Length: 314
Image (cartoon, rainbow, N blue to C red; front, side, top):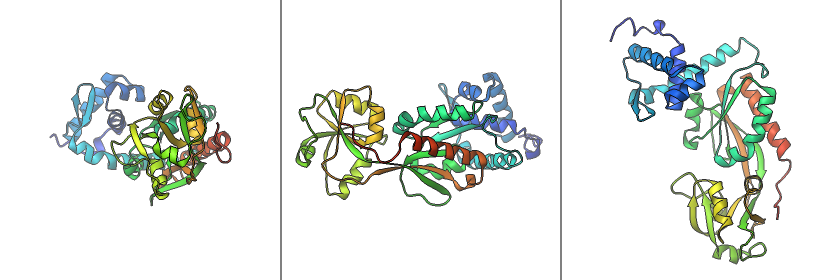
């Protein structure tokens, strides 16, 4: 490797922005779109960075850019340092939502995206018309690493145990309800015995393990028969509307998401603890003006859209 190219002070820092975009998108064209560059400019920048670092960085598999082992190992720490640099530079200028061109990335599950994101984006662009907003999926077990690396700025998810450096704030308490087809043989809310005898649908992006409502049910000593497991609530609604299966889920999420389907909502025949929705962020963002603005915006949108405790719509 040429020693001149290995000097850190000779590195064009713009190349790191390209590296970050390709690592995140795993695709040259999408990375180019994110940076408002051409794919050829992205390829040229990657070539320069490869020469400087002496590593391939990414290997093409079809249309996907797969990181090398060294890239996987070092990228999170590099992104954390880049995020620290951005925060340092931002302290020299006042954050102005009306003029910022910053991209904000919020991690959220599919159900939260479908219910909250449409309202959130409207409020976001009203306040920050030049900025960009991205909803991204994330692995809860890697939340701290993802935030430390700057891959997500904020996460919105159900309550879960976290510790420093992750901070959190409650947004919403939502009761559970039962969702059934309007043609279901039961004409009213099921009794506990009818609930236990019914077939149930559960929703999870994981291949195995109990889901949100089953945690609550097990605390009551209730074990239901889960006949179907699917990945999204959209699929669950389609299944329930065409069968006699039951779906147990948070009320407000169901009310918002199930409108296109012929469904009815019943109260549960037992008292379950309310499910809580929280927003999560890294402690490094506590004093960051843009991060505080985003958290305040999310809190305001949730409070304006859902006030008080949810009630079952029959």
